[in-house]
Length: 125
Image 1: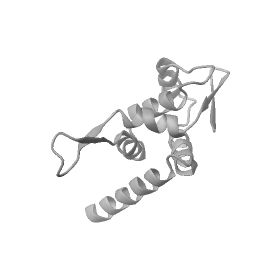
Image 2 (image 1 turned 90 degrees about the horizontal axis):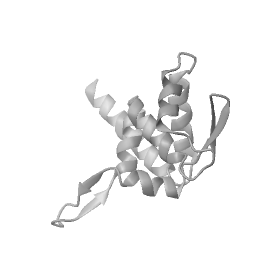
Image 3 (image 1 turned 135 degrees about the vertical axis):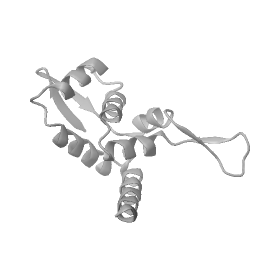
């Protein structure tokens, strides 16, 4: 479980199955060969965005990972935390990516997206 202290308050974040269910709902993709069918791909999309340094994706991910916890962090608190000059944004990205890579529910998808990003980067060079 990831813990962040924001304005002196400790907030908990879990990248478990409940998180995956929620984040997967954020993006759908058509299923090839099955007209009218789609599959949820929000987790993969958001991981890829975070790997690419997308702060909005990071905020959304933290918001969903804190769902069901008390105290509940707000999006404004997350935004203010990221905007704070004392926050090391690079370390925050690294921490979240590390937790995504360790959690049972997100480990495989994180590895898959990291590998896809490496292949894309190699092709661009």
